[in-house]
Image (cartoon, rainbow, N blue to C red; front, side, top):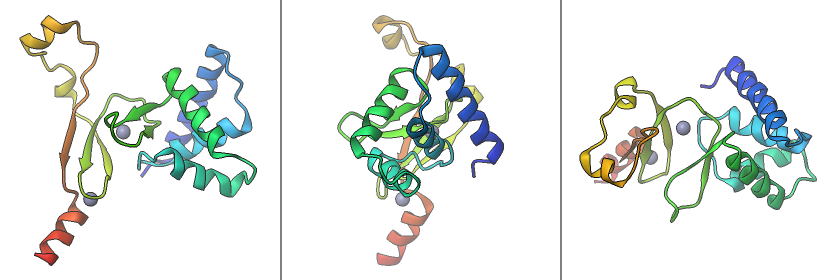
Amino acid sequence: MTSQVQIDQRVKSFIAACRQHGIKATQQRMEILRELASTEEHPDAETVFARVRKRLPTISLDTVYRTLRTLEENEIISRVGSMRERARFDANTAPHHHFVCSDCGLIGDFYCDELQGFPPPPEVADMGSVDSVYIELRGRCRACQIKRDRTE
Ligand SMILES: [Zn+2]
Ligand SMILES: [Zn+2]
């Protein structure tokens, strides 16, 4: 669970980042960010839209898309997953990795200090310099595993 303290912290750093990048912290943007900051589900734009709409009925899906893009461009949030899949978003800017369930699409955060210091393989060094390491582990979450076991 994301604690209230963490959510407040993320919203606060969002406001600071907006100021720094000259983006207006409008109510719509604040609500979108708050929604993203309070979940660990890494939702897609449609899901964010459906939730924010409950509080701001006048908001449009287009606004949500545009806001997410702005936030992403300013590195306030990050996009998760490969280009082929529908983009999902993450307001957790602490260095972390993902466990992805191939069945239901669950994305779980995990932290591993050892991975941050992971020496890049020589092939990678030939391609360029590495700034950060991001690992995505794919498999089946516990709930999907149980479901599979039952139907087998
Ligand atoms: Zn699953
Ligand atoms: Zn994440």
